[in-house]
Every structure is written in structure tokens, then in C-alpha cells.
Length: 219
Ligand SMILES: Cc1cc2nc3c(=O)[nH]c(=O)nc-3n(C[C@H](O)[C@H](O)[C@H](O)COP(=O)(O)O)c2cc1C
Image 1 (cartoon, rainbow, N blue to C red):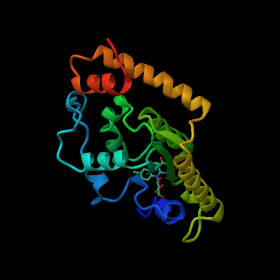
Image 2 (tube, rainbow, N blue to C red):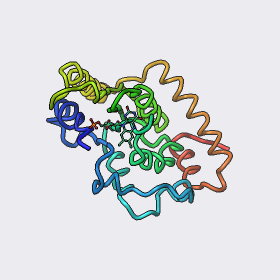
Image 3 (cartoon, rainbow, N blue to C red):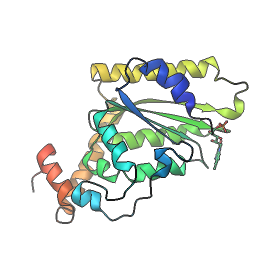
Image 4 (tube, rainbow, N blue to C red):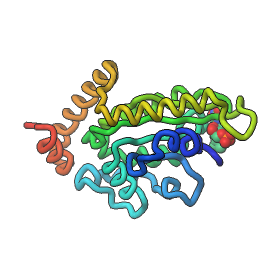
């Protein structure tokens, strides 16, 4: 599966060429790549209790890279109207980051390809995921492969990808605020997580302590 090299060939290199340590790209790659080797969440709650997943695979290393990065790009093909199973498996492992809004201060963007369409909802889903981790989504780009003829992406798509990459860089450099609607949604979601922490404080000591230390949780 050759895509989403839209990221690598058009989006990433156009914007990140001089910033090799700047961000991380999570995409659904062919078998053999670390994202494809990530195992499903076992719902053991160890991440909530201890702050780290006990499964032996590439997840913790990818999470650590995200924590070091300023920006995060999520990319997926449309697989039956959703993100690929590979990427979803990774997202499912991020419950701890969502509970703690552990990617706060980072910026993100989403990239989707499809055979015939329906990319917008998938991109919205990925950006919503970013928002629930505390990262600020700056936009999305997508391509309908069935409408593309020839070896390269058409210029309008390349331009949109490049513009989004630049917007992501600028947001990081200027520490841009989220849009008003995203701020509202982030506040709503954070309040929900605060309630969750109070409810689960005895079962999930790591996250409860995180909230006390980093978010001034009392109670
Ligand atoms: C398991 C699977 C499910 C897919 N489901 C959809 C789908 O629901 N809608 C769609 O437009 N394309 C679908 N596709 C096509 C992929 O989105 C498309 O192959 C991918 O975006 C990459 O484009 P390419 O095959 O031209 O490289 C599916 C492909 C696979 C392998």
C-alpha cells in the first residue's frame, strides 16, 4: 500500500525538511513497520493505575517520541468508512494520554486517503482524537485516490498538504491558540476527565496523582 506517502513526499518533506526532530508522524504502514506490530489494548487498566502499558511492543517507544515532539500528524487510509485497524489499535492504546490530556502543548494535523471518498468524517475523527489528548488540531488534508490518474498527486492536493504542513509549523512556532470551538470542546472534555478522575481515584492512582500534580485536582 503506497499511501499515505502523501505525508512523506508532499506534506512532511515540504514542511519539515529542516526540522528533523520537530515532529512525529503516525500512519498506517505495511506489515513490518512498528505501528503494524502494536497489539490491541487488553483493557487491563495498568496505564491508568501505573502510567505505563505493560505490553511488550513498540507502543511505549512511539508514545515517548510523541511526548518529545512538538507536532503529531495522524495519517490513515479509509478502511470501511473508518481509520485503518492498525491506526485504531494504536489510538486504543492512548487511553492514558486522553485521561491526562497528556499531549497538551502539542499541535497536530490529520491526513486521510480513500479509494472513493468519505475522508472528511475520518479526518474529523482523527482531529477529535488529538483534541481529547490535549493537542491542538490545526487542520486536515485528504485525497480520493480513485479520482487521481498518474503517478503523482495533483497540484491542488499537493498545495493543500503543503499549506497544512506550514500551518502546523507556524502554530508550533507561535504557540497558536485553538479555535474558539475547539477551546470550548477541550474545556468540556477536560471537565469530563476531571469527574472521571474523582470517580476512579482509588482504582487509578497514577492518573489521580497526575491530575493532583499537574492540574491542581483537589478532592
Ligand atoms: C480493507 C480496505 C477497506 C477499504 N475501505 C474503503 C472504503 O470504505 N471507502 C473507500 O473509499 N476506500 C476504501 N478502501 C480503499 C483505500 O482507502 C485506499 O486503497 C487507500 O486510501 C490508498 O489508496 P491506493 O489504494 O490508491 O493506494 C479500502 C481499502 C482496503 C484495503
